[in-house]
Length: 111
Length: 114
Image 1: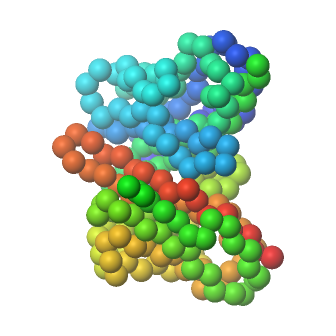
Image 2 (image 1 turned 90 degrees about the vertical axis):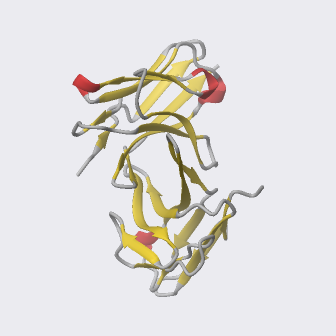
Image 3 (image 1 turned 45 degrees about the horizontal axis):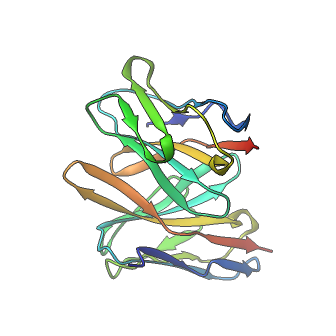
């Protein structure tokens, strides 16, 4: 079965710092990949997704992710974080109609 | 324009009691899902449903029961609540059309079992 690894459990940054959150999935073939964000006390919202085509995917709020098939990776990036990006970030992959989530990365951004 | 709603938002119950968490979506999506979110585990799938009257187990189904008599509703029942079922529960529905395949999540139910 597919699995998703998020290596950074807790990331602390200052505003304007660059962000990269790691995500690896366990096996290849055709994959559909997602990043979701959960702001404090809120539900999960879709940040971006990759189905096919350009491996560099742009999402909302200045986030982007790069699909690297050879590395089974789908890392999330943002060049300059803001305090409002403080949240938990989840990487996920679809397997037979179901989403398989990573354990999440908690991002704290300090002013 | 409600999308997907869950009720109650907060629930405190006692060990051994039956609890039902409600989920309602207004989009007529075929697929619906129940997840639980626990620290260190991320989101884990409890049950899902591909259509009315079709349900299937996810990763952690033990102690839970679901039904789907109508497309828009997908209640989750804890038949005899245990402390290990203290968690935040999220319902989701799935939109698939053309090149899109996205799950939309409800606001969650925070359940505490004493």
